[in-house]
Image (tube, rainbow, N blue to C red; front, side):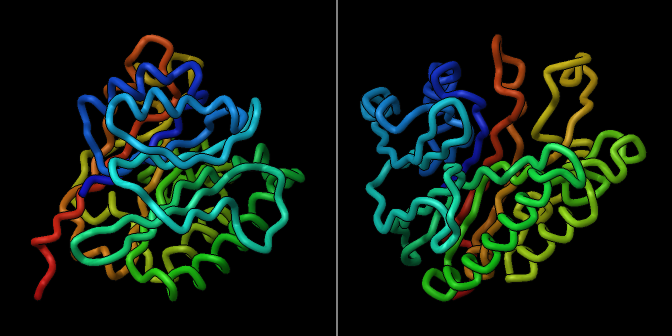
Length: 264
């Protein structure tokens, strides 16, 4: 089973690229972020035509998340329960697998804008609410994967120029601490389970030829629960879509789960 995440920065603009990517990469589940579409504008038919189903939480102009799957999913949860928030940032679904039900969550975590701003404080509160909910969710679904744009580079190795970014939003210590709090629930950063090429990033600014210079950050992640970790056989970043004409500023991240790997 392959699970992927991709912040597409407008599904309306990037739909042909997403469909082409799925044709070349027939993953079992693709978590999308920043749809920037109202619910009634979601292009369900386009995915149905290529053999996929979809669940989504849309929002006009901003935010929005979806989970695109080959098989039907169940127990759909929109946003963090008991956390009042008009922004559409999270969608949880349940998929069947040979080892039992898997909870697959697409998350578009707040950016934070600037350290010390109201949006930064909202970001930290949101992560606190996310952690509290995930702690409960893991009790219901021990096999859980939360994929998305976390808007946090967890360590200096995830930043093209750590000195330049020191103390800035996306890399500040409170944000990194919030990420570690998620890991503390027993989650694993799938990408760091494997030896990776240095300076592998998932996001590059549109400005100043950042992609050409590989001046990026690794802020898109696949976190796996302890019950799924033994099955993870690979986790890679696909840089190719970032080189498209009119690309998203993010690249997809793909984790492969191999059911033959875990001990009996």
